[in-house]
Length: 220
Image (cartoon, rainbow, N blue to C red; front, side, top):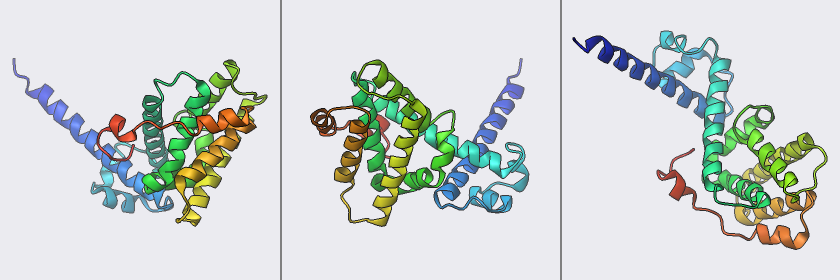
């Protein structure tokens, strides 16, 4: 019995996957540039695919941008999960994730622009950074490490601090990203009830090697 129909279907599936991936990459680039109000034709040209291929995957460009944003944020969120998997103290997990994300503004400028341009949408996303921040803050509260009365407010404060930090670093390219990020993280920890000395100790801990986990040196 011939496997030709199956092989042909597999090739078609791979072609569709490549087309979808190309569209999402093009959309991510446009998001990073803050150019989401562009015609679909420009998106397909950037992805080097035909106009008809777009509608095989997405009904609207808004749907594409949503998928692109979710993909990049969830990919980065998974990277943070891997980097903090061996940390037992939930307060340290939260601090490590924030410190790494702050450093992202220098390390991955395009991804950092995605954060800056979409922070309000990211707050309500079902995956990516916001639900992970919520999870980590809740775990720290349950462990008695944080004193937080309103989890929604705590997540919003974290997002606001991340946005303000990113804008400051972009506005002042000469500013030391590590020192500034750690200072903001320390202030957040103290705001959540961690004692000054403990907060300083946590923010002085060595960070995991992001390249060792990611392995390829590319954006998440």
